[in-house]
Amino acid sequence: MRDHPLFTAYLAFASVCFFWGTTYLGIRIALESLPPLLLVSVRFLLSGGILILALRIAGIALPKGKDLYWTSLFGLLVLGVGNSMLTFSEQLIPSSLASLFIAMSPIWMVGIEAAFPGGEKLTKGTAAGMAMGILGAGLLVGPDVFSQGFSGNVVRGFLLLQVGSISWGLGSILQKRHKTEMHPVASAAVQQFAAGLAFLPAALLERSPATWDAKGIGALLYLTVFGSIVGYTSYVIALGRLPISIVSLYTYINPVVAAALGFLFYREPFGRREVIAMIIIFLGVAVVKRYGQRR
Picture 1: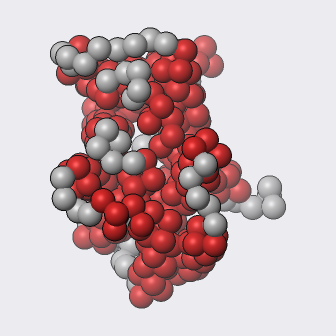
Picture 2: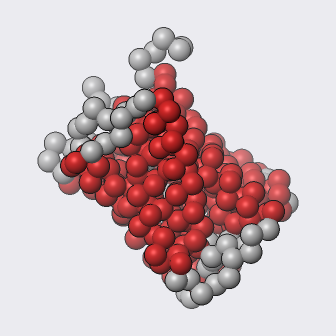
Picture 3: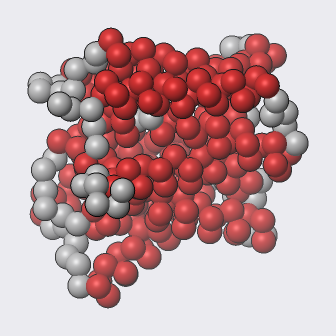
C-alpha cells in the first residue's frame, strides 16, 4: 500500500478528515476564553511562525516575488476569511450545526472548479455522492435545525459560513491552479502567517477581553499544532495531488468526528440515527471517489 504513488496524498487527506473534525470542539472551548479575531490571528501567527522557523533551520526556501504575493492571498482567502467566519459562527450556533453548514462547501468548491476553463466537470455520479454526503450530515445535526429554526442566530451563522465556504473554495481552486515548484510546507507556512498578520490589526481593536487561562491556552495550542500545522499542511499536500472533488470530501467526514467528540465530552446522543448517518456519509465518500477521479 505504501508503494502506491498517491499513498502520501491519501494519508494527508485522512489527517485532514480527522484533525479538522476536532477543531470544532477546539474552537468552541477556546472562545470561552478568547475573542474570535484574536483567536484566529494568534493561532495562525504561531503556526506560521513555527513552520517558517523550521523551514529556515532545514534550509528550505520560502516563496519570493509573485509566489509570495499569491501564496499570501491564498492564505487570506482560505484561512483568514474561512476560519474567521467559522469562529464567529460558533458564537451564534452549536459547533455541530456549524459542521453541517460547512458540509455544504463542496457544492461551492466543485461548482467554482467547474466554472473555470478546463476545470473538473460535475458528473452525475459525483453529484449523487455529494447528495448522499449532505444527507448523512443532515441526519447528524438536522434535529438542531428543526428545534432552533432558521431565524435569528441560526440564519446569521449559516450566512457567515456560506461566505467563508465560498472564500475557502475560491482560494483552494486558485491555489490548485497556481503552478509552482514551492515546497508544500513552505506554502502552508506563508499562508498561515499571512492570515494571522492580516487579522492582527482587527484583533487588537476587539473590545472583548481575553482570559489567558489554562483551558483557553490549551485549546489555542491544540488548534495551532493539530488544526493548523498538521491539518493545513496535510490539506496543501492533498490539494496539490488529488482531484478537488476528493479533497472537498473532508467536510462530510468532519461532522462525524465533531458528533463523536460531542458525545464523549458532553454526552450528546449518538444512537441509531448517528450510526446510519455515518454509514451514508462514507458511502457518499466512496461514490464521489469512484466518479470524481480523473481518468
